[in-house]
Length: 425
Image (cartoon, rainbow, N blue to C red; front, side):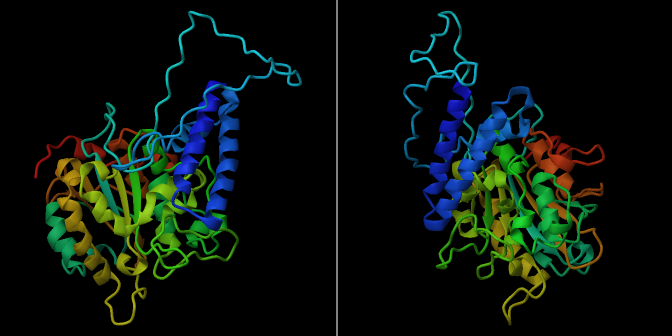
């Protein structure tokens, strides 16, 4: 039972870590959902061959959020119980012995389980199959169409004129859905579109994915690599910046506060991240990006950057008098990208991916851009890529297995091209 006791201890520490930033109703919801999720995961982990491997993986990292420091100052971790409880006899109704039977003197102690991470920190030692880029920054936008973004008459001059010559264009990158949220969910989990996500989830609850459905964020935590989503406009009911903003319960809640739209934030649709505090810890307002980029040790290995609908380039989403659509998205890039490119983590081993999750045209081809010391400046890769390919490529770079549709035999990865090139400024 020692693994179960250790897992339970980690669950409590993870919930405590997440609860530190919550209060009131949201704190109560986290506590309740954490207990339900912990029970489900422990039950699966303890059923042996009949258990769910995905849940066991989730248990190994989400429940260990507080074991290692995630910032420069961290409270001391809560210790394990000093003495384990006695175990029941094999006959379910028997009374437990008051004195547990000691283990044989020569039996070796079981190896200690790794302590996964949940916040920004430097990378662990890469696996044999991992790629060269160890800090990936993904900016998710709405596309004005391939030609309007990257063509000769581009309406995004910063993207096409400033960044395109520095990076490699994935000209064959196409969306799998006309709905932005469906593409975003596919890019972080490999989950295919369904009727609810195709409609951009007007009812939040019907789009929530079960705890055993893992994401790239779950995988990174399991591999002791840091992740963060930087989402613009997230505020609480009083208008103050807040983490992991989403509807609390019930159909019909849109979860939007000000300019923030839940549909821009795919991580709040996964119980694997919501129930055990990963979302509460690492899904943060965009205002935290500049601070985290100042030092390599506070920069996550994977940073997902999601502007609000106006700055993402969605038509008709900006206040009156402010240019919207492609002009707004290009302006956002011109403000945010220079800070990323100057960050110590990017300059050492970074990759910036500018990808589109939505499009204002009927054509699925939108293109994507890779900017990195490991990418070919001015190069073009015309292979057919999709949001599943994006996920597969990121998993390849970090030496992770493929989730969902990202593991399909026909799904291409651009990671090998980055691995084989030499870096340099």
